[in-house]
Length: 273
Image 1 (tube, rainbow, N blue to C red):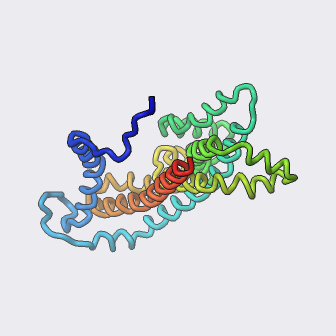
Image 2 (tube, rainbow, N blue to C red; image 1 turned 45 degrees about the horizontal axis):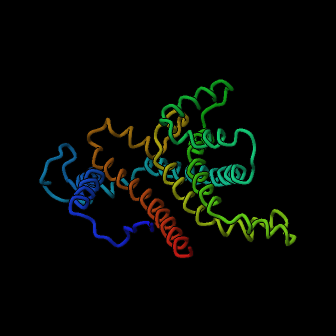
Image 3 (cartoon, rainbow, N blue to C red; image 1 turned 90 degrees about the vertical axis):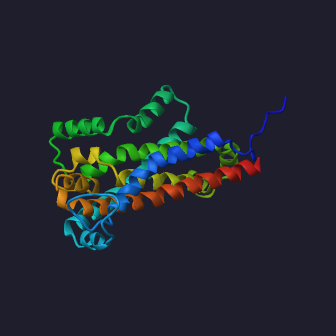
């Protein structure tokens, strides 16, 4: 019997209400944070607001410690994403193209860091670094963030490899192309959007990571740790809210575009079948 298609059917009112409730549950707290970036009172938070002001945005942008933390977070996210793109792609290619003993176990170990609590990864890294007397620095932050960024890239690229036609690579090799030419003209065009989507997701995850940074940053402060340190200062709470919104905006766009890329690629593949 032909399978029943549900595309184009209207959702029931119960499903619509459940979707709205889920969206409100997830995003109302963010709206509340944004609301209290506009309060003129730095001591208390009441509703309705006693007034509306945008002065806290100016105060936040004039904080040099904020700019140092933001710069460090962006640098760490960029380098960790670059490392994840290289390592994640190589790992995905090895798992997809090779058939060796323990392949599934290695694949499981590659995705395990994303499932572990960040504090577990942070403690493990701190112990390993301390064992070899490696001092905490910028590069230890990058290593900590790359551990879970690799997983995102690996999953995206491996999924794309599995949707590729192996005959394309075989045909390229049969026609005399070497490995580099095959990657450049056959493999890379097929996995380019997966790399871009995985890279943007990895950047967003690295930018707002807190736990791993806590255990590897030493004296350097990334933006999430800066926010955490400000929570003990009630007078700076509106400024902290402004920075929290900044983090939301910076992470929103990579995730949004990664989702759009994945959706567009799925539509193209679905239409070609």
